[in-house]
Image (tube, rainbow, N blue to C red):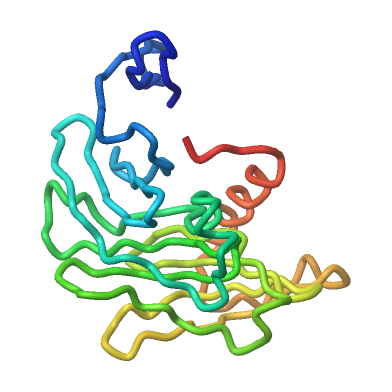
Length: 208
């Protein structure tokens, strides 16, 4: 997605038709925009207010403000540091009990919001904040799966978004053991997709 400088209209590219569409979306002016699942966009303004918007139906949801510990003034000046990736577990056009999951705070944290909640929930990692990087999260087979790098090891996990939210680790790999096959609870297809997503991002993949 880009922007036509002369008209300030947003440009969408349809992969199936190889065609560009121009849409006037004043809601996106001066906003940081992050693409997501099912055609939804997430916007972040200078005051760090988050909104999810369907650019085709113009349906929108105002989400609670998101506060990360240690966010400091730098994130307030750099909107893109607060939100890196956002995914949904279902299309809000078709169901009302959807969940939003995001990676933020410079890849240091994850958070989720369920329709009807007044605040975001931030599952905690069991180790130092300074030596972690959340590489990716995807939704597959009814669960949010992710991979986090802690020092020299990649750890696979899934997120329990129930009342007692928590991260559940399934296995870990390291540089010395990168072909480890002990990932018992993450389906192999999900593993491959997480790795493919992560490698694509390292090679310059874009969200929009």
